[in-house]
Image 1: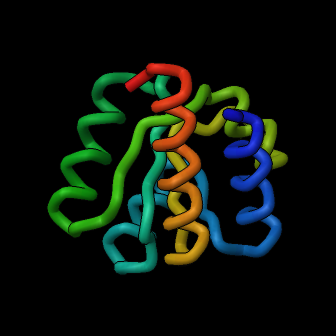
Image 2: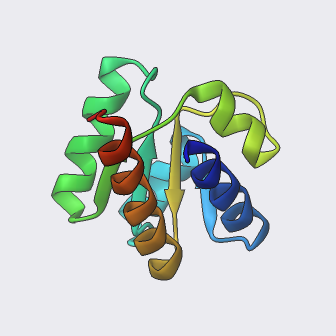
Length: 108
């Protein structure tokens, strides 16, 4: 089921509806373009806190999912700790997929 999420993230990337990397994500959050921010489970505690706080301040959906290496691989990039989805439809679908995966695996 997690592979569905990674594949969907790859689709969002190809559609130009996704920003990756800390600087790009910060910019997307502050400009109001981000509708969902995903931080990798194996990202540092500082990174998780920084983006959770920022998303809380700007009222943007936030979740922790996946591994840095896999996120980068499915986006056709190097290792990625943070990604921001800039389309509300993609965001909504991803939130549902992540919640379903966490429920079915008992994680989170």
